[in-house]
Figure 1 (tube, protein in one colour):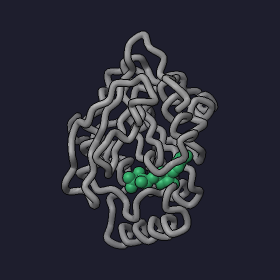
Figure 2 (tube, rainbow, N blue to C red):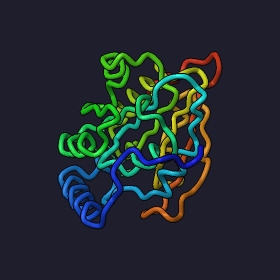
Figure 3 (cartoon, helix red, strand yellow):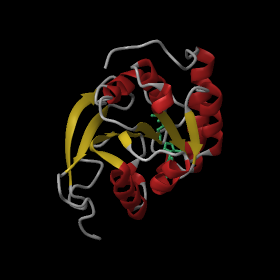
Figure 4 (cartoon, rainbow, N blue to C red):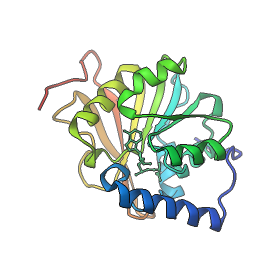
Length: 211
Ligand SMILES: C[S@@+](CC[C@H](N)C(=O)[O-])C[C@H]1O[C@@H](n2cnc3c(N)ncnc32)[C@H](O)[C@@H]1O
């Protein structure tokens, strides 16, 4: 995908500091749910955006949008705002997103309830899921709901894109019948991250076992 005109407001040093302070405060309150002490950088956003295939029909949803650094880069990269939804569980962060990105739909809610949340928005199919959730530190039952619920409404050719700071697949491949591979490393992010891309195994149910 090519860079396009920006649909969110440009970041200023003051705003970056406010975002960082909010992030740090939320991390102190719930470290496993936030998963990072620092918002992601643009390089990581660009690496996530590069994995999108907008010719696949359906909406694009970002899970765990936080204060919106990846949101902004996805919009800059050409994701049409009318096809884009940002989901965030934290009310203060969701309020920041609403104010900052008036052209997209911001949903305050739990990614574990994705099919119902999308249905409420009139979204039947997802072209892509761009997940910023800290899957490795979330409860296993929630990860299962996110992955199974996500693939339930993902188009057959759709992609589930996820970043991680770890070295192994953030979706445990022994528990789900999906194909996944690391598509790039982003050394310039703090901390360095890897982007993984997951797709359906044709004709096979995503739920594998209850381990
Ligand atoms: C690692 S941060 C990423 C934030 C932002 N996208 C970025 O890259 O800087 C993870 C985000 O996921 C959100 N989150 C965690 N669990 C969630 C859930 N079950 N549903 C929706 N959002 C969730 C957190 O509140 C946090 O904003």
